[in-house]
Amino acid sequence: MKKNPSEEDVTLYKLRLLEELEDTWLPYLTPKDDEFYQQAQKKKVRMTLSSKAETLILGMSGLRSRGT
Image 1 (cartoon, one colour):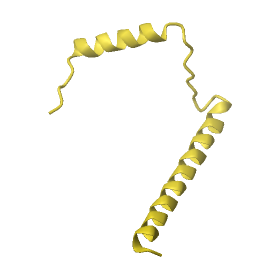
Image 2 (cartoon, rainbow, N blue to C red; image 1 turned 120 degrees about the vertical axis):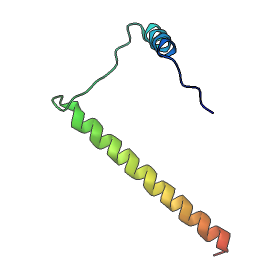
Image 3 (cartoon, rainbow, N blue to C red; image 1 turned 60 degrees about the vertical axis):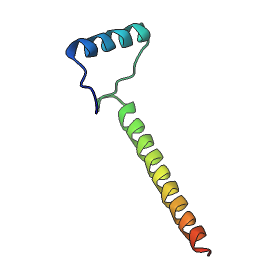
């Protein structure tokens, strides 16, 4: 059974996370940024390649289990 965190716990977690990040710059892109669509396209290609690889691995393991 999962324990639901209280608001205090969530607030403390967020504060600790912010302290760890300190002055680190976190990239946040919006559709108005030039790089937004480039990053989205890269992510789409990576996801497509990984899903193709997963399908290929499942198919090869299926063939192997049948002895072909």
